[in-house]
Length: 569
Image (cartoon, rainbow, N blue to C red; front, side):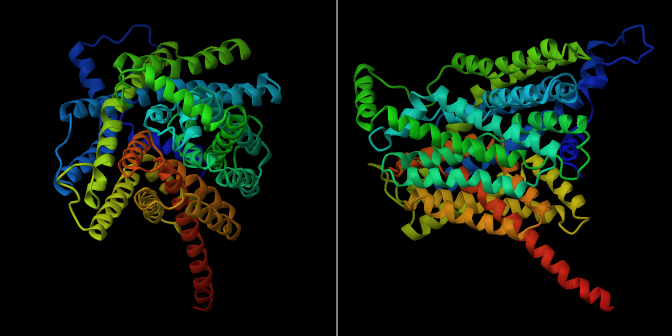
């Protein structure tokens, strides 16, 4: 089964009706359908309720888990509870509206352009357009806003280059991350057309990433950006990038007559995770050549002396979030329109529905940004800042520590494990990926096996990330060996399991999980005086890869051992 079929399963599974079906007339119809307002609400409500419940099932359990843990285990009240609840409602509504706009507005653009672009343009222009699109979809990712919001929480004296990238180089940072996605999209498209294996592409992408990582690791100032760089790989594989780039790439492969392979579509998520890491490392190294740490610290201190009261990360007005939402989506829409109308000289088959979808994409992103600031990010930062009270004394607080050091650390690690496990199982795309793998392996790799492998891997990864912050070990001493293990398992695995295993990390980094984990990590990092709170997402990405590849090898060995017994019988 192709990866495009996997995406279709996601849509089919959760769709009770199609807005297109509700608005499209039959070819012979000449009169509009006359329905009352009450009847229209009755028709649309089941569809709308389903869309909202999808987001409720992803957001509410995680938020409830954090709040209950804070109330009953950490024995602390929820600060600004009403604002948090309203923010979480904004997250739910914003994501529901945004995903509806994505399906009815942005995705049709991708399908039409992917089907027609190779027929009307040379391959060089096709790849250029796809590369530019990679930058555009990065700006449109809901989670990228979370990454931009955490600059003020970094201590400039401990991590000057991390502070500089997140505060003064924000636009170059996002552009470089987008450039990495663009390169991944180009290589993924070429792979679709040429039928290349994913294995050598993984080796080729990881080699420069590891080399630059070692370079930065040995620099006392640059090593603080490694957590950010490796986390950027997880931020980019969200609900906009993957389906839009896939629809373009698979459409081009189909037009070239190379889209019938069962592996079509796999690998884009992997490449879109690795190349942004490389891009951020390159940007950080370039930054180190043009500005010194002393200059960064001096500039930050002089700026703080001028500002009387520096606002916190979350002290933004809703108007700022709305502007950021429009800025994230509108350039992508304008570029897609330019390609469709000017380059392809084509028309949209249903302008009303597509316009409706594009409007919903912008509105949904704006609402989600507000919810991210006052809901997800706030509850994550609040829980992270209080979490150390389980095992250490925080400031002048009399209630900490609540438990002995060993018991407190155990509680914190268990909390992180359950958070990662539950958040992963709540991802709708994981269920669809499980069905795809079960069909690809003719039932040998069952859906439940994949889901629990990925969820356990993410849980272990987040637990390691939390442990890195509270214990204080170096991220690279764990992350690089895990990637080395991943390469060994890749060499030993078949192409099918390599494709599925390396792409499995993409389904774990949704628009809810990423900002929540980032905010919690940074809040926890500040509370324990860590240099930075990044690195949790990178560990939560490699651990499921290792888990799935290991499970695939186990299944293959078990099948090979059972085959002689079956032949003898």
